[in-house]
Length: 141
Image 1 (tube, rainbow, N blue to C red):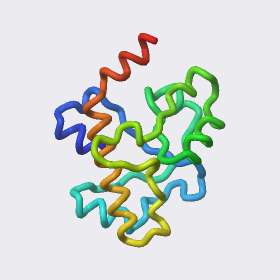
Image 2 (image 1 turned 60 degrees about the vertical axis):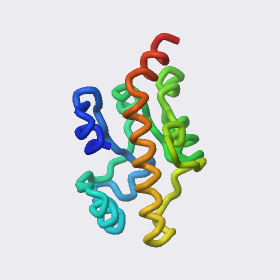
Image 3 (image 1 turned 45 degrees about the vertical axis):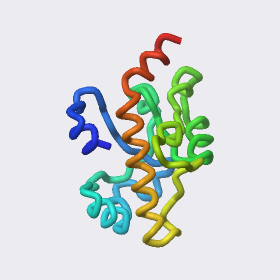
C-alpha cells in the first residue's frame, strides 16, 4: 500500500500500518514466502508483526480485516460503538477481483501467496481511488 500511495503522489494523505489479531508472532518478520513473492512484485516487506491495540481504533480512520473471522474478532476488540464503525472488509475495495475474503496463504502453497498479493493490490488501488471521498461521506453521516 505504501508504495502505491507514494507512486500516486499521495503519501501525505495516508498513514498506513499493519497489525495482527494475535501476538503469537509478535516481533517477527512476515513469512519468508510472502516476502519472496512480494519482492517479485517490487515490494520490500520489512514490517515486524505486532498485535492490534486499542489505540489503533482511535488513531486510524479505518481498521481493515481480510475475512469474516477477522471482522468478528476486530468487533470484539473494538473499544466502543464509535470505533466499531471504522472496521471495514477489504473486499469492499476490490476494483477488478471477485472474492468474498482474502485467504490465509500459509497453508495454500506458493500460489496462495501470489493470489493474496494480487487481491491486496486490487484492494489497495480501490482504497486509493476512493479516498478521501468515502471518508467525507462517512463523517457527514
